[in-house]
Length: 413
Image (cartoon, rainbow, N blue to C red; front, side, top):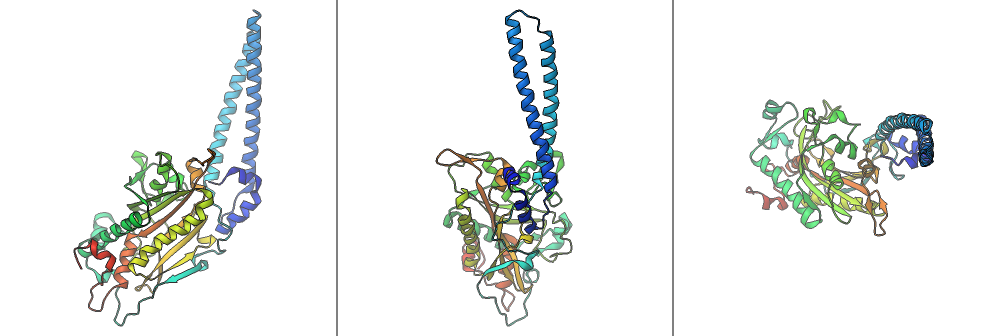
């Protein structure tokens, strides 16, 4: 959530910055709502002053054994008027909150200008794209253990069943990533609920904007998580995590309806309603968040370095930037079957956008409260890592050359 003080003091500047994301801020609407807020606040203060004055007058009259009927009638009328004003203010507060929740985060000044992924800025390319001297296959043709037919039969389109070597590789990748992030990079591992309350989704920015992408369990007022970012970030509301920075990670199943992506990436397991990833979250002081974002990016790319997969890093332009993000680096892995790089991780700095939505403040060494910055990223998407391993390490005889770092996690060699 954007700081309302910033909106009041720099409304037109914020409006211009948000246009980088293609968002048109209704500045007239905000000004109207804020003017009403000031009026009701002034009215409430005036009524409270009148009530205090009447209370003192009643006290004096009673002490002097004087008739208080007129004063009591005025006090009752003021109580009624105060209740009406309070109800109006509560209703207005809901309108203001609804307006603010719809506004995306302000992009950083150095975010590239552009409208789509075609305008993203290339930061670096790492590794050599493989050149095969035999006809290559896609991940569906390499292993028989990826069963889309059974997945569709059990649950519908965009679900898969993995078995045998495919299931083992998937598990190995998950465990390998967790071990690297916990033992090498210093993250604390969490095992999290897969069902969360709507306010948790609101806190990290998935609601109300992306309700069409969420699987809801309405009878219980719960939703399946679209990413572990939701419970992992929101957990700071409910637990005493000690001093920051906090480095948190979790491996979870994630669920997305993929609204608006029908007909896109429907072959294989690249884009599923149910998928798994290892999520990284950092909670940090504002002055350190830029450095922590780069640190997270290094941790996520380290997974691909260890797997010896070719990849590139791009800085997202304003038009491709996510709702909650102020700045994002995408990591894209090379997929031979598609002949291009595809996203396998996004590392984003949301600054104080999420902590404001969650209403979470922390104290610095001087005891002063502030909204911490939150950073999140995949470290990395497990299913897409599986695709990349299968396709980049396929051999002429139809087998897979297993990356050395995965062999300790597998019964197969």
